[in-house]
Structure formats: structure tokens, C-alpha cells
Image (cartoon, rainbow over the protein chains, first blue to last red):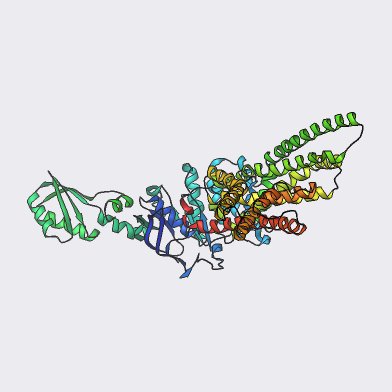
Length: 306
Length: 295
């Protein structure tokens, strides 16, 4: 389990992360969502050891990971793929990977084995002896991911791994990440492609204003988000009765009437929602198009809780 | 190889066109200067029908000064070339998580700088040796010159590496390097002049206070040119500018002990200043983790 505990990061007196706390369970694919891209990248860079927080701790199984002055080998458990990356063009792919293997202090006995495993996983075996500037640019995100996996980390923090990939590239990346999760790795991702990746994530954390305002299993967060989404209905007849029912229900808030349309915020779950509809029709209101307004999680939280 | 950065940088530099081109132009300049000297020597011989090697001493000095000057001149460009990949392609962000990586990174850069200057010097040895033969100097002077080149390469390389490590904008790093080199060479001499005039004004022309003389001597020692004049004195037997400046603040620079100690300490100071800049570069890179994410 990984925990960001009360982390504050400032940049030029501007708060990027403000008392940020988040717990990431093992073996999940957690998507960081929300409109605050700088904060999301910052969370990953703190986890990847690229930057030290001004306050707070980053913990792995309750042990600090990047503690100053601590002779830690925890970096072996963490793989970080930055949002911006490049390569030394005048190196061959195998030389590039050997460079990172030696940086990560992987025993040279395992170099061939690790390189073989990673190149097979990212499907770049054919480029092993090619110079990096000879490799097609759309393979670079895979190469960067491969470099991140060389020391076989348990935790992966990936800052927009889908950037620069076309449709088939994205699918390929998703397949690779799913197979990594099957191998027991936990993955935290920031990606601009949130709605498209909804089915791919097991967990999400919504980050707004430098804080994690909601996190957990995607279904749970979705349920919370849905409660923030207003209910819309079209009342064909019995508007007064409908409004009376809404007024009596303690879960209903902020009722707006626009001619025959009624929009209100409803804090109940699916069962309560169905019961309300039953009450409305039972009291003589003729209701059509009774539904939650369909918006994505990011939009709900941006306009709602945040 | 213990330092992975050194290995890959050696591979990259070996495959880069920049190094052979630098060696080519460097040797072309040295050879051109030497050719002019050879024409001069030939004409001089035809006039007097004998070689007076002592009168050709300046030829070796000019050639060696070109070599030392090239170190200062080339360094910001060369170090800039070493950093441009790392900066533009965000390479540093990819290995910042590994402990101790910044020290290895800086170590690799300075070793590369020394290796590049070593290669330049070795490639220029035939021309230097020719100048040595014409001026009647022994091979020991070439070794001495090599030591000077390495000392200046270390000093100047360390200053450049420091500025390229602390700033993410290459143009500022370049300007910072030039400013620091200027401050250490011309700036210290200017400060010495200020101190001397201030000291004389304070004592109303009776001489300089001892503390101020010691401070001026310290400033002079910080100046890498002092080390160069140790080398200059070793060849010509005259300390040149250093004697002039020392006499300004009341120190007799002609003494044997002064000569022996001052220039040794000046060389040592040069080396220690380089070390200080390198350790500051590593320290700054470690500290920079707090703001590295959004450079």
C-alpha cells in the first residue's frame, strides 16, 4: 500500500499540492483524474522521487520512501515514467537499456534476462540493435515504459503514457499495462484521455485544487459523483403535486423549474431515486424523462464538490 | 565501468562529429601559427646563418598560451554541448530517483571535459614538440604545459558544469560561465587595484596595511592567471604580471621561497576552487529536487 500523507508542494509561492492525502491499495490501476494537470503530474513526480515535498510524507507500507539522507533502496520498488522524456539518439536501444540497468544497479548477471523480458513485453525485440533515432517515434512511449520496467518495480507511476499514441498504440499500451497488473504490479496513471480509459481503471482519485477530493473503487467514486449530478425530469401534468413531493423529500436540494422541466439535486442512491419516482407518480404527477444528467466524473467534481 | 554516465557519454561523444571537428580546427590553428614561426625562423637563419634558440622562446610561449586560452574559450561551448541533450530531452528527470545519481552525473561531465582536453593536447603534441625543438626547451616543458592545460580544464570545466547544473536555460548558463571566468581573472585584479588605492589612501601614502596586503595576495591566488604565470616564469625566468602586482601591494615577488610557494598554492587554489564548484553543482542538483518537476 502506498500513502501520500499530508503532502504540500509549493512552487514560486504557489500551492501545487495542498495537504494532499491519498492511499493507493496494492494491485490496482488507479487513474488520477480532475482538471488540475499540474497537481496530478506533481503527485507522480513526488512518488517517483523527482521532487521532494515541502511538507508531508510519501510512504510505502508505512515506511518513508524518499526520506532525506536515508540510505534507501526503495527506488528499486518504484518505476516512474515522466510526462516529458527523451533519448540519447546516438545510442543503440540495447546500449540505452544497459545504461538504465546499470543506473538502477541491477546485477549484470540479470541484464540479458531483464532486457529480453522487457523487449518482449513492449514488442520491440526487432529494434534491439537499432539506433534510437532509427526507431519510429510512435514507439517512444513504449521504449520509455520499457526503461521504467527494467528493474522490475512493484509500483509504476506513469505520467501520460498514452501521449503521442494513435488508437492502436493506445490499445497496445492498455494490453501491456493490464498484463503488468496481472503480474502483480500496481499502477498509478495520469492521462488526458480520462473518459476513454474509464473501463481500464480499477480505481480513481479525483484531484482538484491540489487535494484528492474523492478516491476509491471506480464504482464507489462514480456513485458519489452521481449523487452530485442533478436529476432532470419533464413533468407533463401535475407540476404542483410534483413540487410538493420534492419539497417533502429530505434528500432533494436546489429545485429549479424551467417551464415543464424540473432539475434538482438528489443525495440518495439508486433505490431512493426509484422510490422518489414512485412517490411522484403516486401523487398524480405525470413524469417523463426522469434521469440523472449524464456527465463524467471529472465534470461533476469540478463543478460540484470542488 | 563504475560510472554509467561516463560510459554512455563516451559512446555518444565518440559517435559525435563535434570531437573530430574540434581536433581538426584546433590543430589547424596550431599548425598555422607554427608555420608562420617556421617561415620567420628560416628567414632569420638566412640573415644571420645561425639559430639563437633563446630569441625564439616567445614562439613556445605563444603556442602554449594559445592552447591554454583555447581551454578557457572552448569550455562553455563544450560543456553546453554536453548538457544540451540532457536539458532539452528531460534526461535528468528519468534518473533523478536513483540515489547518488547527481554526483555520478557531475563526475562523468568533468572526466569527459578532461578527456576532451587531453585528446586536444595529445593531438597538438607534434606541433608543441616542434616549437620546443626550435626554442631549445626540454620535453619537461611539454609535461609542464600538459599539467597547466589539465589544471585550467579542471577549473574552467568545473565553473561551466556548475552554471550548467544550476540553470535550466542554456543561455543563462553560458552567460554565468563567462561572467564567473571574467570575475576570477579580470575581476580579482580590479579588486586588488581598488584595495591598493583604498589602502594607500587610508595610510596617506605611507604604504599598505599588512592585512590588506594579505587579502590582495589571497585575491591574486584565486586568480587562475597566477598559476599561468608560474608556468610562464618557469620558462622565461620572469614572473611578469605577478611581480608587477605584488610590488603594487608591497610584496617582493623575486624571492625564491615566494616563487616556490606562491605558485604552488595558486595551482592548489585553482584545483580547490574547481572542486568547490563541482561539489556545489552536486549539492544544488540535490536541492533542486524540490522544484525539478516543472522546470
